[in-house]
Each structure stands twice: as structure tokens, then as C-alpha cells.
Image 1: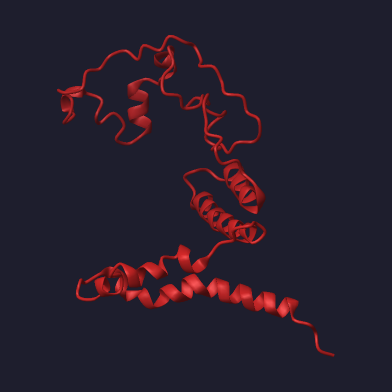
Image 2 (image 1 turned 45 degrees about the vertical axis):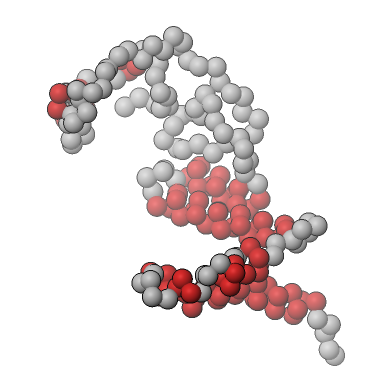
Length: 191
């Protein structure tokens, strides 16, 4: 197997591909849909050459570290830069991409944890802005009374009724704990 990155198509793709018999022997089930006549959509799909007219596409410049799977030797020629890594969440994402394959659960669990850390960082950051988060309006609690939210929960066999009692704990719990911790921190010490 070559170390070349996955790219949609290159002019010399055929030279890089291993022989079908070698792949069939190495990978169970490889080539099951190789024959177009055996595919359900085989009669509808027209197989044409890719038409790639370049050896390698122009690369987007990397201004800063971008997360890349350990399975690939380099970044794809074009990649997203809309959400650069930052803070503790960025450190967790970098660690996940640097140390774990995308086939490992640890990779994805670290990314999920980084998402939670990113949400917490965003909440904390909102307190130093002119418009901090408002947990009452942002959770939709007010709309429950306005738009028939409470009545829609009864008699409809909704699956979320089993855990509806947990919702206030999950939504308000962290705010109550943070308020209590802030009170304990700021409260003057009695001697």
C-alpha cells in the first residue's frame, strides 16, 4: 500500500493501483462490485475517464497547523480554515489527530471531549463580553408556555417523556454549581 494521500483523481492513478488479484487476496470481499454488470446501478452509470489534466493540483498555503489524520502523509490540496484550533479544546484535537488513527475510539472520544471543552470555553468567554449567555432564553424554556410545548408532551407517546425530568438538572445544574462556586470564592471570609 502506498503512502500517497487520498486525492479524488490523478493522471497516473492506474500506475499506483495494485493488481486486482493482489487486492482480492489481501482484502476479503474486495472487488465484489468491480464488474459494472453485477451492480444494481451498473446499467445506468457511464464509466468515463476522469479527465484530470494536471499532475498535482496547486496547494493551498498552510498558515498554521491543521489537523490531519495519521493515515495520510500530507494535507489535501484544499482544506477548510473556518474554525482554527484554539485553547484547551484545540490542544485536545491536536493530540487526537497526532496520536490516534481515525479507526480508534480514542480519536473520536477525544474529539467529542474537545467539543464539550470548547462549549465550556465559549460559555466562560461569554461572561467577559457585553452580551453574556442567557440560559433561560437560549434553552427554549420560555417557548414551552407560548407555543403549546407542555400540552404537546402528553397523549402523543413521545420518547423524550422518559427523561424530561432530567432536562432541568442537565440544563440548570452546571449554572447552579458555577454560581455556588463563584459565591464561595467571592464571599468574604469570616474570621
